[in-house]
Length: 145
Image 1 (cartoon, rainbow, N blue to C red):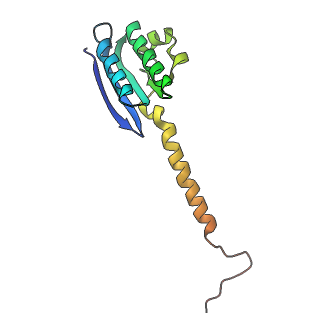
Image 2: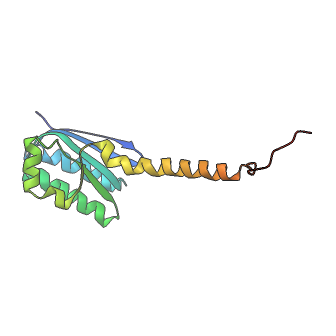
Image 3: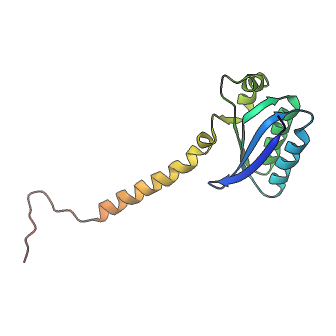
């Protein structure tokens, strides 16, 4: 399967979807796309390789180089790996991918912490408003005039 690279944005992060085979014949396209995104100012990136059928050492090297580029610019890279039963993940684990990268099982997992502060802030606002609403004290009754 030929290499396919697409990208979009979620919660202010660039999400790069990679599918197919990342090997010597297609790695240049992946390298160019990731480098271009970083040089264009994308500093928070999720690279989803969950649909990658094959990744050799050249593909792994591109991921490491991208992480270094982002780190040098105070950026972040999160990586979405194929499922645990997929051969590609097992090979990447041999490279030590989970020690080098912030890895996740899905894009939603990779971005989950970005949604939680929004919910927490909303809950805090609700609590703040609830505290501001006057409540009758126990043992007293409000009388209508």
